[in-house]
Length: 116
Image 1 (cartoon, rainbow, N blue to C red):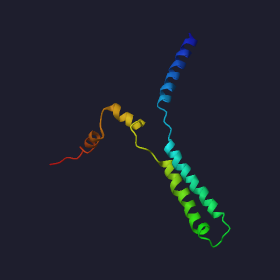
Image 2 (cartoon, one colour):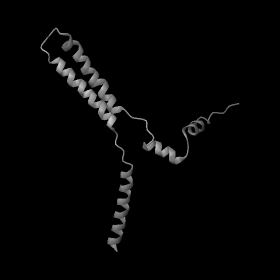
Image 3 (cartoon, rainbow, N blue to C red):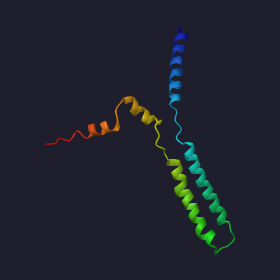
Image 4 (tube, one colour):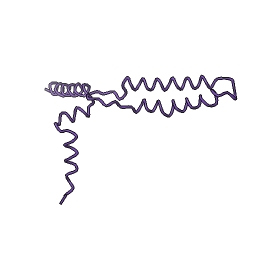
C-alpha cells in the first residue's frame, strides 16, 4: 500500500516537471548571441589596434580606446539586455488565455476616477 502511494506521488511530480519543461524559455536568443559576438569582435579589434608600437599614432591612442569602451559599455550590455518582441513569449500566451486585451486593462484601471 505504501508503494502505491509513493508511485502516485512520483507520477504527479513527473507530470508537473513535464508541464514546467514545456514552458521552458531561454533568456538569450540567437540574436542576443550575435550582438554579444559583435561586441567581442570590437573588443578584440580594439586590443589589436592598441598593440601597435607607435606611441603618438592615431589608432592606438584614439581609435582603440573608443572601440574598447564602445564594445564593453554599449554593445555587450545591449546584447545581454536585448529582448525581441514576439508573439510566442509566455507573457503573451497568458494574456491570450485570459481573453482580455491591453485596451480593456487600461480602461478598467483608469475607471477609478469619478467624473462629473
